[in-house]
Image (cartoon, rainbow, N blue to C red):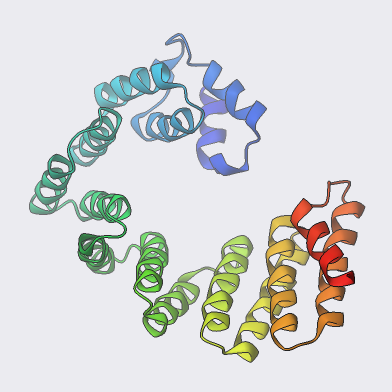
Length: 276
């Protein structure tokens, strides 16, 4: 059992399908085997159980995680997750972040402030807390956290129609992503491409989408292929090249059919519209 837990902890939860996720959670549904997992793995399972609506299990996992915590930072993460689970007021969560920063726990404080920024989107506070989180991550040289931080800052900049700032954040994000993280780069290129397309910089957008498509094809990521070719079709239509748009959408259909996957209805509808 310990070996199984270790295997799952190393692997990304996102890589599991629904059946595998349910099977993993069922191992601990009645409190069995909880004593075999540490705080970190228990908190990973909390996220998974929450996504699948297993609220009762979330409570048991949080309780176990808190009991198993053997340092101040782990205890802080447990308290943070418990506050979210209990629907605590945002001011209480902010207070925990301030306390974590005062206790020289920058990773915990950055994570809390990032969460506060997310739930504050659409308000001036979102930018304040996103920047505070990024500052702590930069001071702590937390590259993985900075990747998420730049994505959030770019999102906020877009919502404020500050596309130049958004592109700056997105390029910094790309610079931090490891070349081995092909999916991460694929998504980042597509995100930056959308920003350039919005500001009318079509050549830059096209180059980035082609890079994204190349990676998506390399790793056989159907969603990535769809996003990139859909974007290229958009650019073709903007440039009054309907034939090129049709080529891109036809390639999407071919790729999905060859993979034995149903072609998205939006693609079929767009192809039909182009042929009218």
